[in-house]
Image (cartoon, rainbow, N blue to C red; front, side, top):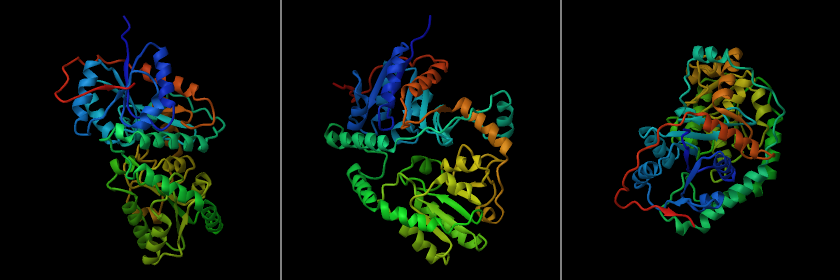
Length: 420
């Protein structure tokens, strides 16, 4: 007799992807459960029978353990495994032998999303042994090259706006919830409006600065979002500022003249931190003001292809550079930080003699990722989301179902409230 999959959805990214995925799994005979943590979750889900969790982060472990056992959950689906709620969920699920399926933005860009069992990035179960990677890849087909999928920035903005609007409007319904992001949504909204007002002048500055770059004579340091939990969880930095400070100081002390360092802003930065001022002020203080360029807007693909090397904490820009044969140095822990792909020595040495990746190893790495961790598509791609949801459901159901956790009695003080 075929066992029934009982799948619990936790937080996704803004938009309807998780709801569409749940619909596909529902059609496959799965029993779907969901926990909403704020009004944005409630708005995006809009399926019956969800649970609105109104408890504290401290009470969450007991609540979740009871939920997994009482409903005999076999699988947990979530986006981003570094959020406090999700890190707890991963740990409890592992203890109860419940499978966890983690979505993230794609390891490879563009046109891919990540779906991996157990964890992603620094929590990925994939070995970092280059010999293992080559051996596994021998039996895998080459990754099919396809035209790039256009991404809809307008859709991403719309979904994000609606999510956080519902978060704010319904915040009294979830009084104990604290976002994993460092800023309140209203403060972030102010930052985005200011970014929009400055966008034209930022584009002009960036074009003028990029025009003086000479291919092969500059390094690139792409900023990650300060709220990026992958940065904080998988590095020794508590934010972007110390990583930036270390990189500029090392460049000043070791990079040969006349090489330049290009610091590229993240396209989704909310503008609440004036990174341009911080970068240029710090560069002047280090005596390299004439060798550091800050770009708010740029084609990251073209920028990386012309670089002498890329330094990053653990951004997916690193895989973009590897695909182009550009040397990469990571400052944190990244799935692609593999001997033979990235530079394993000190940052000081990287500025002087950056070593390019072994492209045969990169091809093997790419085949393994496509087979085990990636799905073709984009969360905000300008195309129907149904094929991606079907592919994701197929990947989830392909994993052998574990025995469901045993039902138990709810701990004292735990209340499960069904959504209306």
